[in-house]
Picture (cartoon, rainbow, N blue to C red):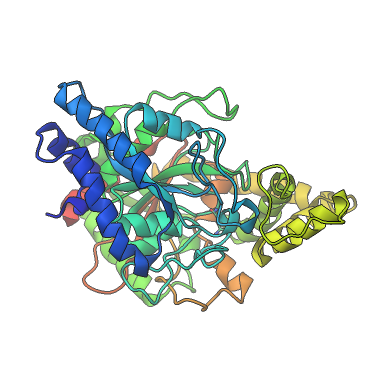
Length: 481
Ligand code: GLN
């Protein structure tokens, strides 16, 4: 096994047994990134000096025989909309091209306190808006399984870094699917935690009522381990909640898992699913049935409104969150000549020059649905529909414990295929968006397939029941090897 193929568990065990040093592993990753990332393009910036220093600290702990945390020394990649003090945090936007983070996001503080190593910051769609990473202002990220195809988005860089063996694990953010869809496209595991499980402090906000930070990993077990280490109440995020997540996350018991009933929502298996996806879903269900799990058909009747509802609420929040990105407060925008401009002129120049077209589209849409005269017709109405979508899940969860769906209706698509047609791009998130609207946890797991492109399946859980979806995932993983 190459060092860059390590999982969190294997890294942890190897470090404890002194099979390698954290320093050597980090160096191996940088060497590998130096060649492999020229074609994949997962990283926007790498930070070798800082990372090697962190790795040395981990090795000192090992030398002193101090107890090691799961993540001590683990080389990780961080989406470039999550702040690490002193490092760039561009959100893949020209607006923040020259910005250096003034403080650590809470998830970073937590990971630093257990000694994780940050290799670099990964590419994304500008301000996390998109499903292919094609909206990045800086570069293309390619799918490591097929370089002609997109890695998904918006956390395409984090997914590609893990899938391309350029990080042991990564963090991303998920507002409408941005962890789960790229995980599915790249054949890795992606978890969107329950809303409130992980602090949002220090993530560059997209739509605050929907955003959650979560892990990308090679195994479901690793996902559980990384999730546990970032979860918990934080005084800087009033929506965060303390839950006593524990070992049950990565140590599930088969007798508990067997009792879980799985719902199959008819609305997620209609026309529009690519035949390849259908086939993989059927095979996966067979495997899950062989674990002794019972399946039941359910209905989530308001699913058909989820996308239109999301494209009102999300842009409304985007337009207010991005109002502060003015090219003055955080960093100057390169290429804007300030001379002779009054304040309004400067805002105008910065924002028209610095934002990409998808970001502008959403700011304009959001401003429109919040404007007086339209607020009730659009925004207030969408909030009510959001409630109905959440109630669909509440009802379903009276009958079943977990819901099984595809992650995406299609396999990873080619560059340029959807980027000129926003609606086609938006439709690729149809199965992930309702989960954010309801604040539920969901995990995207690569289905085992012979050859072909990666296809992921999604397990949606009840609020705070990450252990159910991660538990089923871990037994699936063991069965499918
Ligand atoms: N692809 C979705 C969008 O464009 C979701 C983005 C996200 O989860 N950050 O809005």
